[in-house]
Amino acid sequence: MSRILKVAAAQMGPVHLTSTREETLGRMIKLLRSAAETGAQLVLFPETAFTTFFPRHLIEDKEELESYYERSDDLTSSPKTKPLFDEARELGVDISVGFAERTTDGTGYNTSIYYSAREQRVLAKYRKVHLPGTVEPFANPDAINQLEKRYFTPGNLGFPAFRVPGLLACAVKKNDDDGSSGRSNHADSTTVGKGDAIMGMLICNDRRWPEAWRCYGLQGVELVLCGYNTAGWAPDLWGARRPLTPAQAEDEALFHHRLVMQSNSYMNSCFSVSAAKAGKEDGRYDLIAGSCITDPQGRVVAEARTRDDEVVFAELDLQDCRQGMEKTFDFARHRRVEHYAPIVEQTGVVEPELL
Image (cartoon, rainbow, N blue to C red):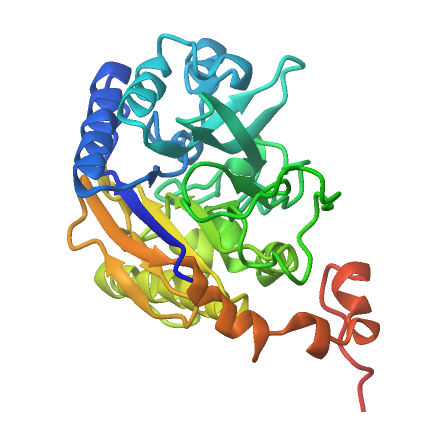
């Protein structure tokens, strides 16, 4: 039985240091409306969507720095962000959006949330685990910095998958009968792959770490949402054994982006949606585009054609996840966890002894 879900990535073009909140929010609402016109039930926005990607800058003025953060407990009611959630509710379209979070105890996180228009509330929150870059700027004054380790703390919520109600008309519920069956809250052999859509969130660099995807895969994830701001040119950050032109570096960054979205979607038998903030910010900082929707066979089914504001749309059948989950990647039959200890017991590389 088909389980159809219509999704969109809301790719955003450059957001500059001089861009006002009102201007950026207006662009996001316009993208949301355009996606709704295509029939999208869910729209994904990029990482730190409401502002420029400020972690590339060394910001020492406290008031300026705080202007880039949101309080997650009032995200849907704050004047700076509320209009987006109001529009989503009015359109009946779910959204996932990334932002810089400041908690009540002063901790900073790179965060994304999932908002259900049907439920009129935030269903799930994810905090970025794999923070790239450095605490201090590079010594090279011309370097493109990546100071997420300065402004954010690694996420503390893990990788919890979640179900989203109201998107699939045919979804089996725990009490689909008269409520007298005593059915468990957990899916069993009669209900697996038939309930409400199972989703997970990643942010930017997380997509490069297969452990994160596998944590979701082990929860039966059917759709992974990943917003990102990925530099097209940052040799001090990446390192390079051979010189690349900016154009070559951007091509390589796009190749790696597609590679991890396609390979991990395939290896976990799930769909994925990725949404970029793209283009050249402040006339200097190149961000790749490449927002795409990928199927459980690792094929890109829709992809951005520009480096500007653009809606990337696809109609998915979540039933397509079952082929991989039940055959090639049937984890229950094929995984050998007794041999995977180094993955959780070891962080850095430990080479074999020298001969």
